[in-house]
Length: 209
Ligand SMILES: C[S@@+](CC[C@H](N)C(=O)[O-])C[C@H]1O[C@@H](n2cnc3c(N)ncnc32)[C@H](O)[C@@H]1O
View 1 (tube, rainbow, N blue to C red):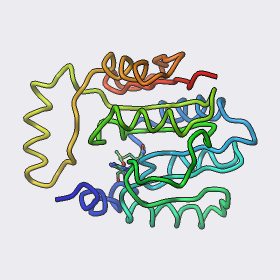
View 2: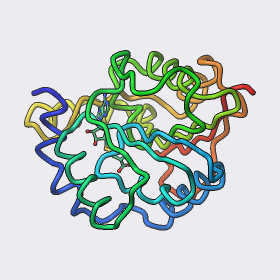
View 3: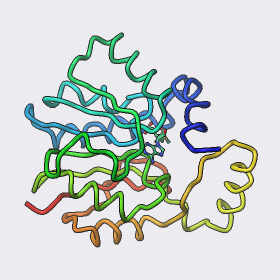
View 4: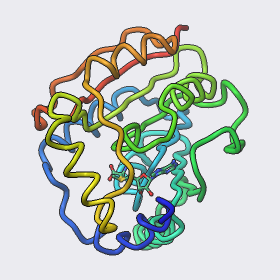
C-alpha cells in the first residue's frame, strides 16, 4: 500500500484523536511562533489535518501546509474554513523535488512535525528544506527518534506495516538527526526541552544568514 493510502485511510481517526501531549505541543507552538514576525511566510511540511498550521496563522503573513494525503488536506481545509482562517493555504502532494510551489529562498520558516522519520530520503528532504528557506530562516523539526530501541521498534513496525497498521518508518537517533541537520548546512542546531517524551527530538535550527 502506498503511504498516501495509509494516511488517507486513517485521516478521520487521526483528526479525532486528542493531541498526545498537549503541554508539550503548546510549548512547541510557542517556540515556533516566537520565531515568526507578522511578515513571515512559513511552510508546515507533513501538515496532517492542519493542527499546527492553523495555530501559526495569526503569527505571520501566510502559512502553507503540505501533505501527501488528500484526506488530511480535506480535513485541514474544513478546519480552516470553520475557524474563518484565510491566510493558510494547503497543498496536496509529497515533499520531494516535484514540490515547486515556492522558489528557492522564498520561506521565512519551515516546520516539519512528525515527518522526517517518514520521508524516503531524509538527506534530500533536509537539502530541500535548506534550499527553500531564506538566509537566516528557521527550521523546526519535531521527530520521533526510535533508533536507540531499533531492536524493539524494527520488528514491531515491520509487523504493523504488514497488517496495514503503520507507515514506512525510518529508525534513527536524535544524535543522527542533529548530525544530519548540521551536515545539510544548518547552524544553531539545538535540541529544545519541551517536556516531551524522551523519544521525541524537538530541534530548532537556522539557515546561515
Ligand atoms: C504523523 S503525521 C503528522 C501530522 C502533523 N504534522 C502532526 O504533527 O500532527 C505525518 C503526516 O505526514 C504526511 N506525510 C507522510 N509522508 C509524506 C511525504 N513524503 N510528503 C508529505 N507528507 C507526508 C502524512 O500524510 C501525515 O499527514
